[in-house]
Length: 307
Image (cartoon, rainbow, N blue to C red; front, side):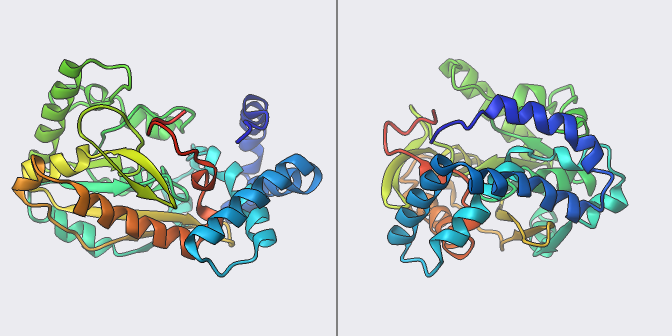
C-alpha cells in the first residue's frame, strides 16, 4: 500500500490537533477521520487501492458488507488510527473517560485479582493503542512489551519514564536485537508479571526467528511472534484479549474478553492452538467491523516480517 504522503500528513495533523481538541472530543474524532474520507473522495488512486483491498477481504472472510461504504469509512479510520492517542493528549481525565465505552472490565479485574499479573493481548485492529491509554488513565500497573511506539501523546510518554528492575525502558524490544537481549527482555517481562503488572503486547506481530509460528491469517500465511504464549505459560499469568474499535459516533468501544490460561507445557510445546485462538477472534472482529481493519487487507504474504 502506498504511504500516501505519510510524513506530510503527520506534520499537518500535529499542527491542527491542538485546535481540534477544543471541540467536543467525539466531534473532534469525526473531524480527524473526515480528512481521510475527503482524501478518499478526491484521489482516485487512493479510492481504487481501498476498493481492491476491501473487496479482496470480503471475499476471504465471506463478509456481508458494502465495498464502497466500508472503503470510505476505512480510509477515514486510517487517519484516526495513525493519530494513535494524540487526540487525548493534555485532556483531563473526565473528558478522556467520556471517549470510552468499556465492556468486560470485570474480566481484566478478575484476572489481576489472582496476583499473577496479566498478559493484556492487544492487536493492530481498530484504535490499537487506546486500551493502553485507558489503562494508564485508570491507574492500572502497565508495562509494554513491544517496540517503543512513536508519535504518541506526552501523557503516555510520561508513563514510559519508569526506572528500576520493573522499569519500562528495558522492556521495549527491537527487531535488531541480539539473542542475549531477547532472553534478558523475557526475564524482565517475567519479573513484571510476577510483580502483578499488566503486560501489554500485540498477538499479531509478524516476526522472524525464534519464538515464532507460521499460520494462516485472512487467507495468507504469515509468521507471528509467540512470545506472549511463552510468557503466559512460564508465569501462569492469565491472558485477556482486548479489542478497541473506532465507532461512528467518534468514541472508542473497548472490549475485554474472559481470561484464558495456556498451560506450562505450552512454553516449550506447539503454540498453534493458542495462536489460532487469538487469530480466530481477531478475524471475527475484522469480519464484524471491517472499517476497523486498518492495514490487514493490505498485508502482503511474504517472509513474515513487517515492512
